[in-house]
Length: 495
Image 1 (cartoon, rainbow, N blue to C red):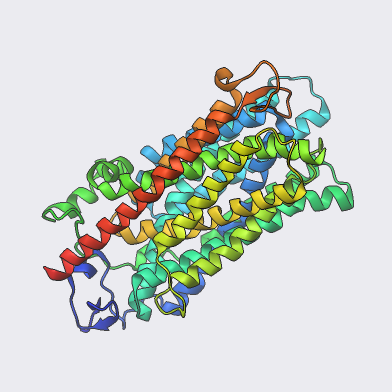
Image 2: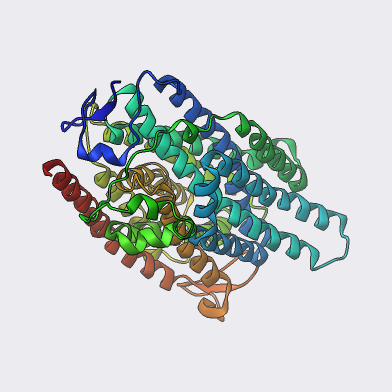
C-alpha cells in the first residue's frame, strides 16, 4: 500500500519516508476518509459558524464597557480571568478527551450564554424590577461561563485547524506550512468579516430603525445560538486521522513520548507541560502578552473614554462603526498576509516578518497614546488611524500567529493553543483589572489621567509604557523561537 510523506524539498510524494513527517499522521491517498476538497469545504463551514458565534460575542464585549460602565469592565475582567484559568487545565483536557469538533459545540454554546446575558440585563433594567444586585449577578456569572466556554472554543479551534491543515496537505499534496498559511488566512478573513457585519449591526439599527438595546441584544443572542446546532453537522476530522509516532522537538529521545503525550495527567496540564518542556513556547509568550494588554487597553480606554470624548457620543452609537473598521482592515490584511506567506506566491515573505508588522502596529498605537494621551488633540481621522492599526495587529494574531503555533507544535495542538489563551488572557485580565481597581486611579483629570464613561478617573501612562516595553521584547523573542524551529528542522533533516 502506498503511503504519503513529505520529501526533503517540502513536496508530498507517495511511498517516501522522512523524519519530519513522523510528527504528522500518515494517510493513505486511497483511504475512505474525506478528500482534500471535502476537508477544505468542511473547514470553511466550521469557520463560518464559528465566526458568526464569535462575532456576536466580541460585539457584546465591545459594548460592555460602553453600556455598563464599571460593571462592564469588571465583567470583561472576570471573563478573561476564567478564560485564562480554564486554559491551564480544563480546556485542554476536554478537547483531548472528547475531540475538537465536540469542543467547538460546547464552547460555542457557553459563549452564546454570555451573549444572552446582555439581553437579560437589558430586560432587568428596562422592567425596573428593583433588584439592584440582579443585573450584576447575571453579568458576572455569565462572564465566568463565557470565559470557560471561550477557552474550550479556542483550544478546539486550534486543534481542528491543525488537523484540517495536516490532512489537507497529506491528501492534496504540498507543504503543511502552506496549508496552515492558507487556512489561517481564510479563517481570519471570515472571522473578521463577520465581526464587521455584526459590530455594525448595533450602529445600523440604532441610527436607522431606532431599536432599543434590549432588541439588539436579543438579535445577538439568537444569532449566537443558531450556529451551535448547525455545528453538529460538521465532520469530525479527528475521527479520520491516522495515528503515528509523534516526534520530539527538543533533540531528545522520543521513547515513551506518545504515552506521555496521551496520559491523563498530560491531558489536564498540556498547556503548562508544553511551556515547561519547550523553549519555543516561552519565547512566543511575549507576543501573546502584547496582544492581550493592547486589547484590554484599547477596549477600556479607547472605546470607554477617548471615543466618547472626541465624538461627543454618550450613547455609544459609533462604537460599533469604529470597532467594525478594525475588523474590516483585519479581514483584508489577513487575506493579504496569507497570500504573502505562501511559498507559491509571486511575492513571498516569512511568517516572522508578518508578525513583526503586527507587533509594530501595537507599538505605534501605544506611542501615539503616549504623545497625545488625554484625547484633546484627537479627531475623527486620528481615531480612524488607531482603529486601522488595531486591524493590522489583529490580522497577524488571528491568522499568522495561530499558523505559527500549528507549524511549531504539531504534536501538541491543545497545549500550543492553550498557551495562546494563557498569556493573552492573563494579560487582558491584568489590563482590565488595572482599569477598574484603585491601583491606577487619579483624583482629578490631567494629561495622563482620563475620565471613563462612569465618571472614574484612571492613569493611562503605566499601561502605555508596559505595552511599549512588551512590544520591544516580543519582536526579538518570536524571531528566536522561529530560528530554533528551523534549527530543529535542519537537525531532523540531517539525521
